[in-house]
Length: 477
Ligand SMILES: [Fe+2]
Ligand SMILES: [Fe+2]
Image 1 (cartoon, protein in one colour):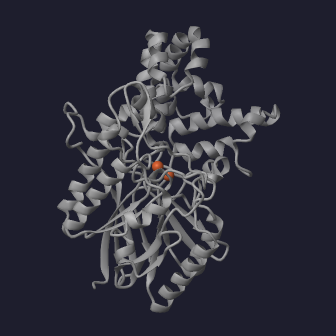
Image 2 (image 1 turned 30 degrees about the vertical axis):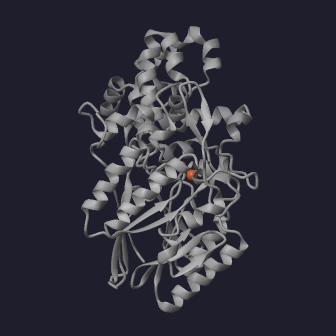
């Protein structure tokens, strides 16, 4: 076995079999609500797989859960067939599953229900239960493993001599604890001991985030984090595990944790494959050099779909919420009823109907508002240079807002601290911070993580406050 290896990592494929839906409102609304390109998932996956198959220097492919969207058997069969195709081409395929990959049997908190979307509603279809996943995907991970924790379906594989990959399956209760239980933690520590004794480096992969992409994520939705994430921080630092690959948030992010002794690790989260900006990670390890190199690969075209000459991103963009809003605003400026109809499944239509009268003026105003107006409102106008003032008079707030929204999932926010947009928007948020604190507006205060502020929260989406690059990272193993 060589002491070098490389692998592709794909997460949150959310594959939906074409057998599971017909064109109509029920599935269209599901797609809008889920904010991923569900209808095109077979073509998205196949286009990525073509890239992988064309690369004969990389023999390993890793899937980190939410491989299908609703735990149904049709989608699992088609997804597993694709794993088989990769294996037939000589690839080692390592799969773990997550909450979207099974349907609860009433014994945990998983609420997914497998269904087929008809023109008017849904009908139940066969699905997999959690206990069936191990055998179903046995050929893709457990079979090649040097150790298996049967209860959690987690396992360890060798990427190459000197580097092991621990695939931690989603051994939770389907919602509020998606991580290992005591027995699994003991197994993990034992495996890390063995790797240490052998002098091997270790990488981890699991579905749920170990570090949140944004602080507000862990604050508002701690149950979405890896179950026992703080304990895993300690374990990773203790055993010198430098990286965990995650998914679930559908956001691309690379974040570092460092403890008070200077021990550290990275959570390398990969955007959902089914996002309009979906990407896979490409990871190279070299045991002799002691280096791991992480980058990412997207697709330019979407094969198997008539996109009318559009790129994959351009074609899929209208499904994600920035794309929806980008279409909604000009629509609302002209026609409130068309706005309400197009917003169904994304915005609360009942509430919109009550404020129907305000939709056109609000959309018109929003489309015209310049950054200069916000600079005056936020008290930053005087701090801007003459060049920045000229820029603020030219630029529309809405364009900045869309740039920020477009970067939420793919990461690398567009406006670092010295940009006009950052200065102006931060000024407005700073004023809001003061108002919220003075008036004790609880509805907003409870959104702010302890020790943080709206200004700090805004910086997280205005630019990359993490490692500076959500796409690439090189670190010592
Ligand atoms: Fe997901
Ligand atoms: Fe998930």
